[in-house]
Length: 367
Image (cartoon, rainbow, N blue to C red; front, side):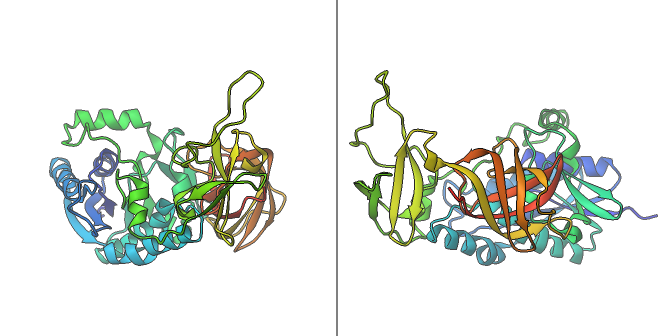
């Protein structure tokens, strides 16, 4: 019997490198694919594509797999970046990694891999797939501190049935140990942070090049105008630093301390930014939310009234919630404890224990 062929996305990072080695150890025929998704300023100090390709090719050599590079920059610009800018322009805060997985890694990449004769694709994500009575389930990674199922919640049955996540079963610490034991050239490479196409560059400076920005009033919850914002796109709910209110006097507590200021609301219609003082200001706490663009891994929404858990941002512990009306397009959630800085544009992702059910894009935080 011939070996199953797996095409794995190799980014030049340590996770996908170890995943490629694990697949080979498991007896698959493995081909590496390096995706180039961004080329607007390839030569800048912030864009590491060239070095990443060198690292991926060097690892492929050590592990003993073939690798090829494929350019998805046009698809990325159309399907991910254009949507990213549209959301920012509308005053929301999108999560491009969620879009990138749905539109590039598990669509354009999957299609390309199938043309290469692949049976399956794989990535270095920390997540697991399980078949259960003919249905495919997306599960959290064994290492909950690294779990990335949040970013994969838009995958469907057809995509999951073709996907392998070798790192889902092992802790991140073990991944580094394997890389060192194999003497992989990138064993000490830092994990990449930040948004894929922005790299480590200052975010505001990057957005500045692409978004029109219209200054407007900055107001308190009382309606008093206390300054001017530089454009609603450049602020996110819950933001504390870089608001630009240096001269604004803070109200003092009884003990003489003062609470920091936070971005609490954006009124796009009047181009007004509202700021409040204190982490626990009522405007920053949401007992419920509504989400659109729903995507359900099983192909159907959870039942109205289901008691589940949710994340409204990636780096957050799961919180208990009850599903309000849920359908193919939209759903509502109510929380036992009001959630802090629930942000339109971010993803609300639902879980039943370790099983990721899907989610959607937050429209309103109903604060």
